[in-house]
Image (cartoon, rainbow, N blue to C red):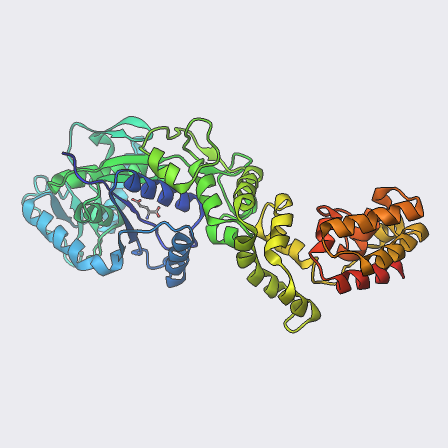
Length: 471
Ligand code: GLU
């Protein structure tokens, strides 16, 4: 029987959880879930200059919002320093690592001579035990520790995404695994962690492909079982360039603020570099059922914000009005000045029904909230709209409508009949009554069906707005 699958997400806390990181986390998570395994969260915080507690928090919040739950962790590399040092000592004892005493001038000279000879600068192994026999370490130089990389042969692995990759050992020099102050270096910490945490599948961005052969060599020197590796291609912006701020929101939490639903984000992210036939909309459970490491794309994917919005719209439409009202009401309250008339009016409305009516035309919760505000805020009628749609005949139609609305049954059918009566009475066409009514009550010329919209407002408020606009 093969080992229980264990994957990990190992962000460096140098900023928010961005789209690329979230996609990596999602794939590692889904892979573990598909095989009934474990998903581990590890914070790679050894870069003290760039890591911040705020970034750790932002990453944890992003993961929580997307509901990508880890089974173990978060582990913090800074809390594991003793363990790394212990492994370094072990390797020095085993002879798989050695002290190297480079005086800076010596290294400069080496680099210079390699460059002059047209070679790529690389450490030449001069302090390898075999090469430094009888050499006395220079005084006052604190040594670094280097890994004794195998000299001949190749490192080969079958990448889950990229297929077979082979790198010659000739291309690698002896990696520094501890600096002269004793602190372990990045690639080394990753190796010890993946080993100690029993990671079976390393799924990460392909900016780490070059680290993999080095990490494999160290794992082998430690006698560790090497995990499988899958390197995910980058996510580009819509213009095919590296994703950056100028493309719009790149932090997942910003999508929450922008009114995206976590499930929609999961669905859209899953399609960046992975596919399941032509399926575009699928649930988290379906993703888990399908995500077996196949159908991962070899080439970079491109963010398409229109499509992202479309996916969100699909999820938003499927939610019931009551659930939408629950998530949007706090957003609406935040828009309205506390204690205002609008805020008071918001108390008495059937928001579930309102959300059900509005959701067809809203792609995000922000759009939905903005439209919910039409019901409680005084309409702001643009001058151009007033000029075009609130002429004399329109205004008298609004008066007539107010008159009808005073007595009609206050529901959709009753209001529809009231509008019809005004059409008959004035000889105007239906839009010549409906558009001014929309403008008068909601401040815009386009809304869902006007009878349904008005029925969701208190009669008194409708009468007041119709008469205001009628002047
Ligand atoms: N900490 C690395 C990063 O944020 C990931 C390392 C890994 O997955 O091995 O890019």
